[in-house]
Length: 263
Image 1 (cartoon, rainbow, N blue to C red):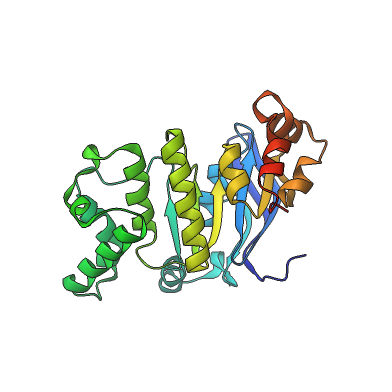
Image 2 (cartoon, helix red, strand yellow):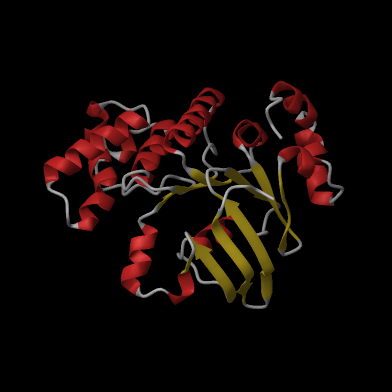
């Protein structure tokens, strides 16, 4: 048991597409200030689970409680207020191609309709600085950005409303090793300095080992484990064995020795 309170509680969640059952009676707890990595094989519904937690998709049944609020029961105004307390970094950035970097980051702030443009400008420049970008980058268009810059701009937008909870869908996918390492360091720094709770879908073992507090393993329609990395690696479930100790995961124990702080 964690001493930290639950920020997210998922109970009895079902995801059904036609006759295909993806999640069945799925339960998941996410603790305050942790970095939880969600892993699972193809088709286990990792991204779908994130989308259902944040309300972009609706489960067939079950409940999602965030910050103590039962999302199913909230009126639209209250639901909007709660949603402002989290940010989402989509796998490919999901930047609006017709908007500049500045306007992409400013969009959530403008949607509030409560801030003057000079305050929005200050906030955008601050968020650019937080993710390691320069003021001059604000004028660029998404088509002019490298893959690493797209991730940073998308992260700046996710942080625009100063959320307490951050969702990351494959944050290092498609990045070269140097950009990947730099982005992982950025997430670690932001997590520490902003006291963020982070929920991350990833298949990248290096990213997982360097950042994760706990791992939630999706398999057989459920979360079969939600525990520190060392405990999960010790499981005998076929997916866990293949993911951490198969051909692509042989370096698992080596990494654990490299990062002795992993518990």
